[in-house]
Image (tube, rainbow, N blue to C red; front, side):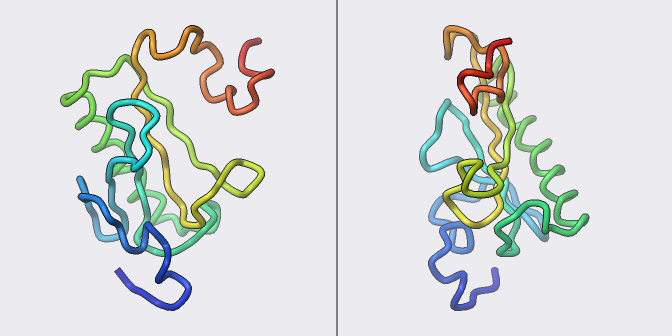
Length: 128
């Protein structure tokens, strides 16, 4: 991965965990602070903070690794479902300023009422 002054402290430009899958422009690894067993991150190799600034080739690479990671998690952990998400901007909860896609396996009973799924980012709006 290319390094410069701006990226020298980025945890995704210098991954500290095993890379599970890798392509020319992206890689996948387990989340350092998983919310469920098997929580993975899909990360572009280019240092860009906003998903919407990525080129189409990189977005496609993320999607390919997302699909490959999902198959791997199906075979390894047999989850009952998935949530995927990208935090884009501080108001959306982004804390690492390098794009990354969360792939979160879900298991029956991991929460009392999963209805509304990702709408839970605003708790009062999750159940409708």
